[in-house]
Length: 532
Image 1 (cartoon, rainbow, N blue to C red):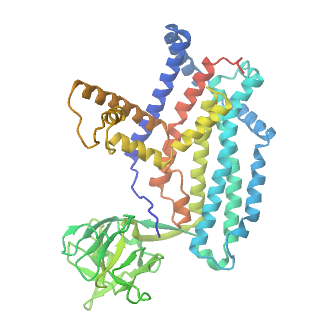
Image 2 (image 1 turned 90 degrees about the horizontal axis):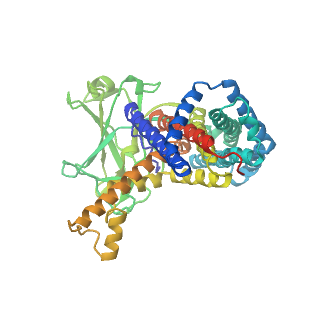
Image 3 (image 1 turned 30 degrees about the horizontal axis):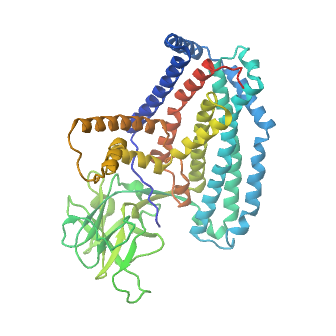
């Protein structure tokens, strides 16, 4: 099982700091763009207009009417219905009518087929919902301006901030409505497509991960053995030596035990054979629990490695060592509720590979529908985020340009783009920044050679520092959508953790509300509504 849930906890204070940075960066961009636009169009008087618009916005905020916003939201619903936006349900229904033909035998299926079913449903929902929302949010206001129907609204008591909010809420509600219908149909399809004997695979496991360290063959703390695997996800321990992989689990008490009083340890170790021998014979490992405070330890019988599937080991609470009975929780867990677990390979000259998520304490399962609807919630938050960005963009540029702009921001918000920007800012790339790289190319200087400390050196470094600061601002403006995609958790049979996915997604979404509303408000205030 090649799945790393990335269980790095997002603590509330850290998450709040990210929210502040994102909101602050976006508001800075909005205010800077608005001021620059007024200076270009109105000269020095634009400064006075800018502060007057700020005062006007504050006044409009305190005069917002929920009834007017709801009326504009209903108008958005009616427009979407007239434009036949809900015809996406027809495409969705056709896909699910024929999907079962191409997805294997329904008499008995494997966990991998269940993974395909879940991934297919959630991916289809995402790909069908987002284009509809993107078109509705980016073409609504420009189309009103082109047809001059917006004059009917602005001549009423409706304020421009209410127009923006009405559009954002209306498009978001349409997207959520579409999402709820598709999510319900998709859930029913998954359950009906999975035969009764395979329903056990539709679970949401709740893992409790621990930290890992390795002990080398000499018994000293170090790293695992590199067996030449290109993918360096796992480290390997050598059999019949002192090499160990040691896990430390926190907050271990009676709550981690199942209904029968057993501790469930699930692993997905990998086997590497230095000599083939009998390929039908499994490699073996043992599990050792020990308490460094009182010296009590317990080692299980040899267990076979399941090379291609996860394996569940049930450890009873009552353990017997040399005719002495110990309690797993009371005797092997430290006073600070830490549980130390050692894994050793038994077979000589053979290796077992493991990584941090390859061993975890399996807590009581949650129903499948819990994780499924959490994944749908992640898609819903993306829908809301795209709606806000699209409506804000549509107040500045025309529909096609707003669509392209929103789509580009959505693409740049992926994991690879942010990793690339992080690498640029951290200086991991050899050769320096933009200007330094150009200088090295022109002078044919090796990237590992230091630049001469001349006046030009400080100019180059200063310019690259400015660009890096601008890149930092771009990082805050471009949303991080890694946590929004919760399909991988549910497809692999795990519950969606709140701290890792749901909390960051909620904070990122709320961080964009104020800046997007401000940008849309300022754009409608200074934009010429007579233009087509």
